[in-house]
Length: 162
Image (tube, rainbow, N blue to C red; front, side, top):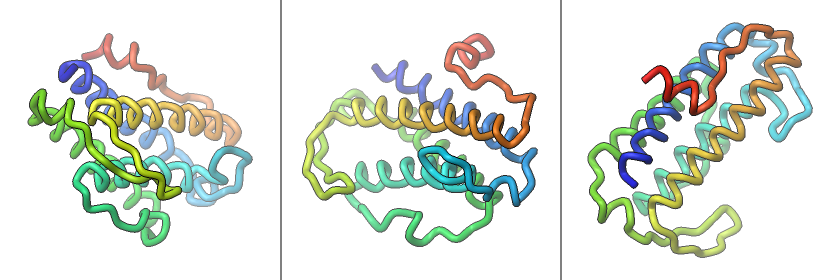
């Protein structure tokens, strides 16, 4: 299980770097332009990506705080930096984790204040899968904003390059 999670964490960081590099081709106006999607702009979609990595980290460490959308006011460059920082943090945590850490059942509450208990590895698989979903939405948003050269961010592409 640890080897799979290490791969997913490395892939998540790589894919986030690729999607940020692509977003950096956009103007500030394009990054903030309203687009019909799960989140109303490229910026807000990236904010959600960062927020999810942050919230799950807080849950795992049992130090849950307000979500970043309530306090983060940085520009896209700062947001990108924070997302990559969190992705590296997850990768480092998994690298140093042992089987007990990975299979540990932890308790948390979701955004609706519902209580759950799950093994850490299930949360990690959810986290990385969730990020893939929203990176796919970003690619669609990029196309709507006129970007034509968008690098693939599929797991299989990453695995061929490692």
